[in-house]
Length: 230
Ligand code: CA
Image (cartoon, rainbow, N blue to C red):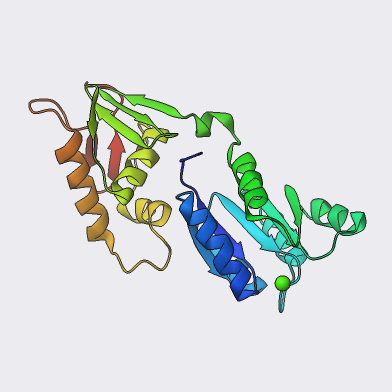
């Protein structure tokens, strides 16, 4: 099973279907946020960042095509999987013209949905590499295993997701706010102290005494993962 976690915005007004999809994708360790109308979807896309959008075509207010066009017009680049109850080729072409990357006709099997999600998340390849190494720490994202000096280190889910984010973006400085936005659910009750606490726990689990910390604090800026000991 692809274990790399993604933050997914699910735009679906059928409550039961939305719950089914969320449960299925959460079982594959993704974070799923649900909104039930097009306007809320655009608002979410404006203030939060996601790895993938699953967008129902028929929605109250703004429909999926309008959301898609509006998002792409604002240079939104995240992959979009469009859902619809209609199966005609025309509808599919309209969706793809509006900027959707893929299309799934209802009713669909959740396995099929998850397969499409995996395919869309696989791009770009460099981002989705499954074996990450940084100094003496390795991460196998297919198995969700983290090792330090070859020995397995047990991380809590959010610690794992935070570390994966750092390892996929080495030597870049991230503010606590940005880390919070990328790693936690948008409606999480956690605060920035939660981010700091998780960074401290990662350090205590992964740092080597006498060596610079794997996660460096950049004063007044945030944190970055250092690839070299220098
Ligand atoms: Ca609908």
